[in-house]
Length: 186
Ligand code: ADP
Ligand code: MG
Image 1 (cartoon, rainbow, N blue to C red):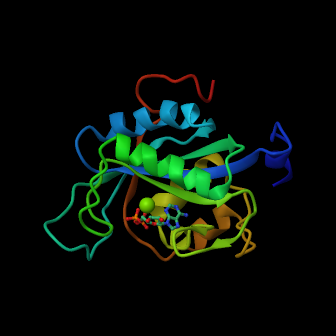
Image 2 (cartoon, protein in one colour; image 1 turned 135 degrees about the horizontal axis):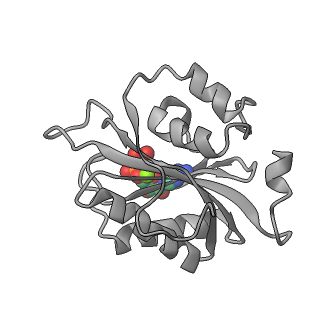
C-alpha cells in the first residue's frame, strides 16, 4: 500500500477502488459515461483497467442475461464513505440503472470495493465489498491496476486473492481502454 498511499494528495483524500459493470444496451458507453460523472462528483479517477467481457453470475432469476462488460478504477476522493455511496448511486440512477431483479441486468452497477483501508459494516454499506473475493469479474480487472494492494481484512494482496479464487466463470479481455478517450492512463 505504501506506493499507493504516497499518491494521496490532500491529507483528507482517500484512495478508493470501484468496480463498474454493465450488461444492458451500449455497455462500453455506459462505463465510459461514468468516468466524467465520477470526476464531477469529486471522485477523481486516476487509473482504470481494461474492459473485460464477463459471464453473468449463474442462478439469477429470469431469462439468461447478456454478458457484462466490467472494469475497475482507482480514485482519490475527499468524500466520506456514505457520501461516496450516494454519489455512485446518483450516477447509477442518472445512467438509467434498472435493477429490477437482485443481481439482475443493469445499465450500470458501481460497487465500492475498498475505501482506503477502512472496514465498514452497515446495512447499506459494507467495505471491503463482501463478495469481491468470490468474483473473478471483480478481481481480474482490479489485479490489472492494483495487484499488490492488500485486502485490509484478508491480509492478502489482490493478486493472491485472484490466484486463490474458486470462481471459474469466464473473464475475457475485451478492450484496453474505455472508448471516447478521457485522458486517464496517459
Ligand atoms: P451487487 O452489486 O452486490 O450485485 P446490488 O448492486 O444490486 O448488488 O446491491 C445494491 C445495494 O448494495 C445497495 O442498496 C447498497 O446500499 C448496497 N451496498 C452494500 N455495500 C456496498 C458497496 N460496498 N458498494 C456498493 N453498494 C453496496
Ligand atoms: Mg452493486
